[in-house]
Image 1 (cartoon, helix red, strand yellow):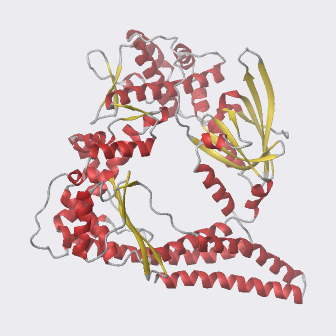
Image 2 (spheres, rainbow, N blue to C red; image 1 turned 30 degrees about the vertical axis):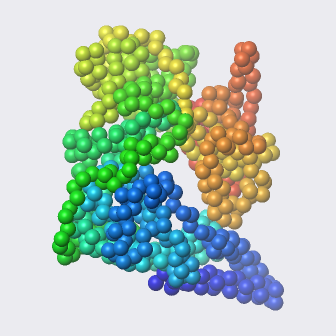
Image 3 (tube, helix red, strand yellow; image 1 turned 120 degrees about the vertical axis):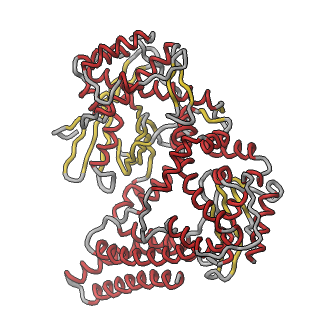
Length: 627
């Protein structure tokens, strides 16, 4: 099936080349308007198509990443893998790697259409090991080894090659008109068939691998493992997004990563909330690589129960040599070895303070732009809100396009939090069961910000809020210092733009616009196909801002240096002129204009406006005259 599907792609592509050759032959032998248009059109289509075909043919999947787990380092884990592989009758993997995902998978390097196997890999998600029992982990390992036993990975390389070829071909045809649009529909139709068929085969393979899992571990352990995988995935996502990762923005990370995750998994209230994901309805999609959980559980229930099994209810971490050391290695791989490691209480308190300070400064900056008072403080914002400036502040916080009361309320709560924490009478406390961080008074009483800053906040609420803050000892002149940042957020991408005769791809970051110089030839390559642009931007996003800034010709337009930005557009061209103000160390102020233009192939006007408005807010204005 895999070979036939891949062959179908090549035959379809060769048919396009054959038609292109015939069109060029007719153009030469019988020149005319029709033959020339068809010949040139087919040539324009064939060149990027040929490029996509060549690149797909040369593409090789990379070995999986992760932390290596050698036999000498993890003897108990390898002993379990070897035993299970022997019971299945298959060769164990050559390498095992630990990854920070709720996942387990196997892959295989093969040659000659799967006839010759080279190297086998297995990845094991560390969060899974933390969540499962030994019996359940053995079930998961048995499932993955079952893919080897069922020879599911032998032709995986061919299926992967076909997927890459189709994706590159569709990318080469994307955005074109005429013949490109027609061929795009043809290849899109074939891609739908290809992926529907190949994914249906993969789903059947998953059911087959589940049967291996039951034979090795029994129905109960197999079913419990599948349920636990789904709950653990939700728990890990919550843990990273709400507890472990936010501090990394400021260079702060947990000293005991896996200990914190274990606390989430053992907290009854939190676990009950996470367990509700099992009740969520599942939708069947023909392009899914796995059957639904309900389908897999039904198939497991229909399997015969093997005899002689003694379930091992020990934590799966019993198979690891040193779980704590593995957690440290995993944390360093995820967040970097140079970050400051803190205990969970300190991490939660410091991160909450820094997050509140940063959001508070955004609101104070918006107040300065809308009200003209510089520098703005807590009292300034309260006075602005009391006189009815809330809608203007909401528009400024949302990029100057529309009122967003929820954005204003969120930032106001952050400003209030920042002032309370600065008073010294209020502390930020970690909670494993409720909101990750709660504000508490000296007696431990939890402070309810929603009661004093309700979701619908108007001028009438300001006097009570001001009195309440004063009662807590908050300073109405409070203005936090800007927190040091270890990372930045991506707002958008501007590709193929021009400034002062040079071409750039630009990352719109929450601290400014990072311009990375490209050649004129690179800037023009998106004219025939969107694929070169995507590949170029992909390489850009794989690099850190620091690495990009170190490249020759790269520079940063600081967000706070921009006083105003004027947009102008005509047909498919656009330009934006920035008024930039810089203050030297000696207090000297310099002002000047900077013009950035976009002409296809480049980021379109709508996306450029969206990204720059998100960064500069109401400073971005529309100009009726050319800038």
